[in-house]
Length: 114
Length: 114
Image 1 (tube, chains in turn blue, red):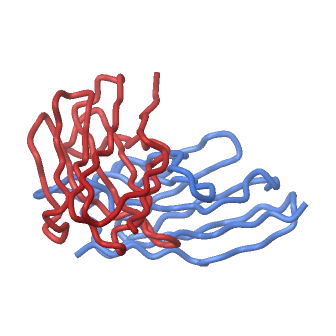
Image 2 (cartoon, each protein chain N blue to C red):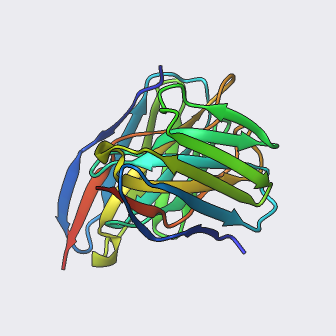
């Protein structure tokens, strides 16, 4: 069974800092990996999608990397802003058989201090 | 239009009630999903409709019943729910269900069972 772990569970940093969120998964047979942002009580906003054949994706101040063989992904946020405060979820799509949904990590709760 | 809409936003129901949640997308996606998210937990996959074929997470109780009237609409019928079913119910869609595609999430329906 695929397990997804995110470290740290919570992070509080001053505005302007660069930061890294970590995600690991136990089964490397994945289609893709997707990073989401979730504000309290809200739905999920997709940030970045990395296909299993790709090593990284970038969008604005966000950069996500994927090392499928070691089962790791990182989300790098540059020049953090208070508006970045949210829970960040990592999810993997598993290859083959059964329902093709995503398996999520428990998330990193991020607070950016003004 | 990259939007997934869900209605209602909030729902309070008694344990003897029958209610339905509705999800709609107009992106031409052929796969739609229901996820359940308890407070401070990651989303968990309940059902997938991919090209009108249903896949079920075997741990989901039969008091939840999905319906896909067409490729743009997804309903979740609720009957005889328990208080522990109170959660945020998220709908998502993707271009296809065969993996490798980005999933787009709706804002969710906050369900409270009394």
